Image (cartoon, rainbow, N blue to C red; front, side, top):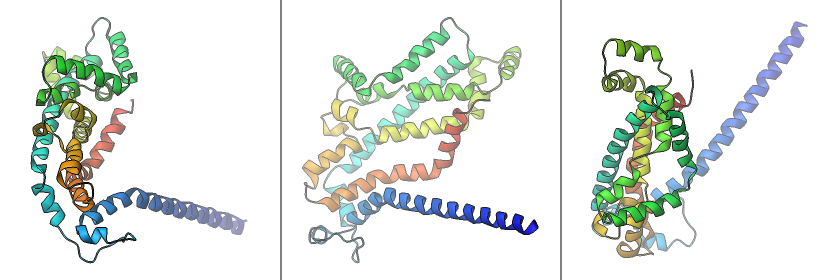
Length: 289
């Protein structure tokens, strides 16, 4: 009987190893598929214009890399200005978003007022409205306010997020009400309780929504493209089209890829640094108890 037990144990261990090996193989293949476009983008940016165009069969490596395309990305077009505009837009929008989202989440999670549940339900229903319909309304409003081709016109429609308020509200509600009641007994104001107690406890989620908003702003394309036609207010995302049409031309693919690499690097670095905090914040915000 012992031999039968050992044989069953070895068979089960072999099945587990086979499943684990198959899983790693599938994950490796999937990772290669996902990462290949990034590899091809970087590889193309390191090839010279003539070398790239002379390749009748694409090569997956280069023996003579060049960084001329990166220099051209900053000299042929105002890429530095696009970066500055995007940085201003991202920082300002994220700061205002936090100033709106955090008090709103606190109010829905801790304060008691008439119609709170109904108001929050209506608030959540806004997530069902397609972004295209909101863009039309925002465009008319910003145009009527004469804010086209201004930073305020870029920033104002992006300062609220129903999803971020919901995520932070769920996180705030995990903090025991006893802490809030004890703080009120001690005479602590709501603002002080929010800043001194709730935000430190919910720091992972706050960091998460901050990073997600930064990524959202950096990748914003449709709204900046719609509301700005002055190159002085172009962001890196909608500046790509200007680069393609007025900078390198439609044939200089290596220089275009170099510009795309330069634009993508800040977000990649940001995600790699804070990826654990992003996952921790999302998991914390979505878990009750």
